[in-house]
Image 1 (cartoon, helix red, strand yellow):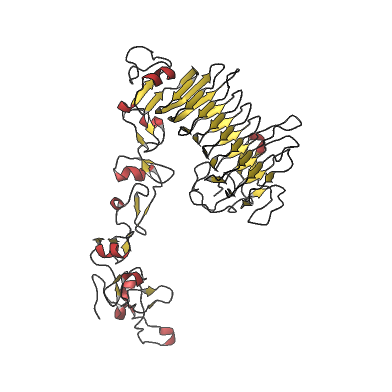
Image 2: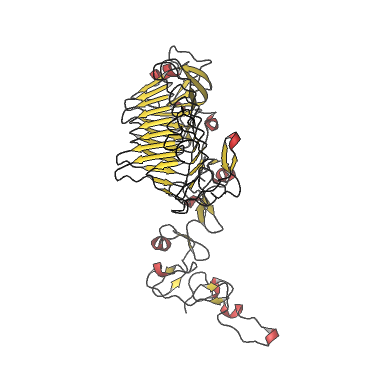
Length: 512
């Protein structure tokens, strides 16, 4: 028998166990304490006996962890510890040879990528960071542990206060100061060559006119007013702590003509008068608007009114507007981890629009009574083939509609071959309308009050046990029937609070 590498057969020594109580002194040639005691390099830890030698023709058939390589006839450990071509050839994800003969993913942090940057030496696999101290130890200049487990240079703009004051959300790195145009409503001036960090401009509108091809416009915290128009431009306006109040007779923000606009951290409010008093007015195919941590509130008409645009709302709030929170006609609407509440004419209206709405609280929208709204939480009117159509892991509760409305929670009117994916939502405690849900959407893994389909397709009808409805806290309490009752869905990894989804609870909140 050939002993490979650093492995040694120690069967005779390990088998020297004398069972004096029974008077037995015979050695058990198969007795083992560890894999290295066996010719097969595989010890059964339950019986303490060696598994049979596994014959092979290729490494793909070698199942024992400590004998992953086929030497042409028998499965054996990998060779010299370190980067291993034989391990890589067997499995591209485990290209290193460990001291004990296993093919593993990593031996140290240098083998791990940016998404899972830490080598866990307990099993030699790459994992996400647990805290920022692990990121500091990596010494790669990305010293903050993100909720995703990646080590990054910044999560908030405050992390870049000593440099550009802007955290690039795409790369999670501090933007180069040369790429940022600066506005300061307290000390800026709209004259000369304003726009530098030391000499900022005074107003957002003036800054946009001068920013040129700089990718970022940074607006220091404060109160601003006016009407912002972005026409065919590509730029991200970063304004943590900025409150922007619209002048009369125009939207707070108008975006059109193929613009690619980002808004980060601002509050847009107060549109009023006769000239389309919406918070955000977005128009034209090819126009893209991304809102991150943005609040759109207290506007006389819709919060967001979109036609043919692609809009992303992430970690934001659309609330207390006098008409519909978000109205999307054609185009795309993505809402992630946001809060749509207290909009007088309903939460969301989708008309022939692609949509992806996840991990969002849609609560306390609409109006009850004879003069109430036709929409409570969500209305979907899609008459054509649109992709995607996803409404998943949302909490749609305490919305209201007039008595004759189709529903107070969610109404679907869809046709054609488009089949919306409606899963893992809470639709509960909505008032008015003819029912909680109506129309022809197919529900699964959802908790719907008074739902005739409860018991089918993993749907339930049970009190979700919200924390405190009176204080608009629609998180789940311990013991909720929604716990672990949702559908495991690719791409939905976190909940509203950016907690990792483990058991996939129904609704926007993950208890675990």
